[in-house]
Length: 470
Image 1 (tube, rainbow, N blue to C red):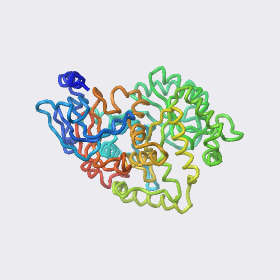
Image 2: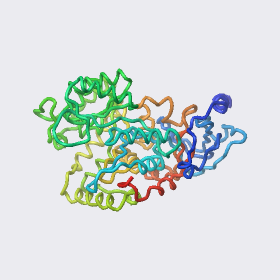
Image 3: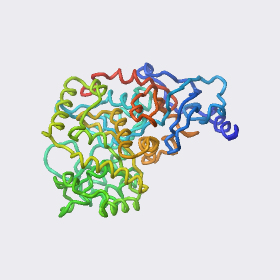
Image 4: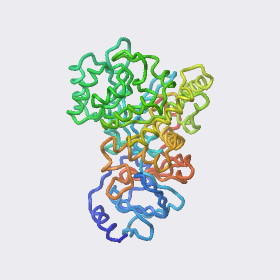
């Protein structure tokens, strides 16, 4: 490989303007590196493209972007660069979470994680999120604005606005839509407010969902959904872009399903479905034909599986006392069989479906869905990686799912998601080797976003006891 291959992009990036926002006083305490040119030497690289693990690599960051990637013996370190020896460490792309709520609900109540969620995401290696539905969407828009201006530490945010749903009675925070005309008006409004995605819930009709998708695409917005009243195949036919949770929520297989109605038996029935049968194969073919993408959220559903429901001690430490007690009580009810549960056999089918979808050529991304019950930003993302490996993905494949694939769903893969020359320097330094020991995904030392390096331990420590409060 010639030296010229590396020099040309490096020269261009060294003279380019910086990508990163300014670092405000509330962010500065967490920054460990903001030199304009940085070299990370002797590091193991899993680049997110699916390429094999590469040892003894040097990665050069210049003005917030990746300027060079290659063997230590080939890459020339620019004069004046800040050099870090990362012998024994692994570098992966920043994680991209497509189901990144900023609220937390438990029997202790509903709160926004306006401070704790962004710091946990960033501190644990998640550099980009899509909110996938909000209880207080303006809080999330304000958080995004502060992060973009360098006034708060957190990931890059793609806002999906409030939950959208069909007409139904009773209280709730979802925006309920009663006609196609109302759907179009609401979609146009949120496009104007800065949302780039929309998230639909399980009681919407095909007519309303179809109108909303059409209007969203007119505004260059994406549409995803946790659906039930509309099946996966029906949503694909309407033009939906993304579907949440995978196998467990799809109502295609429920016998005698009433049109545009969500049956309470839907998720319970899934345990009877043959995930390797012709009906599932037919759904996969149809979704692939219509370019639909899927978001896996295995880590949150594992918390409903008796015998598997547990939360890392570090995540429990992030919770306020009332939220921690409520989460532990909820987990105990699940493990004792007293609460809603996902049967172990169904959870195995969920994992099998995710692998089957990817093997068929489907685009699978991931998200943590931290709405409550102990599922927390960052920690759930790490568990998603481990569960994907458990499902049969190689560690290299699992890294691609939790990074590059998310960027691809967001239509941002040209800008970030892999460790590739010219892309934003969104990188995670791990003290270990997740290709050999998947749990090493949890050993985050530093996180770079737009070339600025953050201290993971400081970000996580700063929100100890805060989830459930702010």
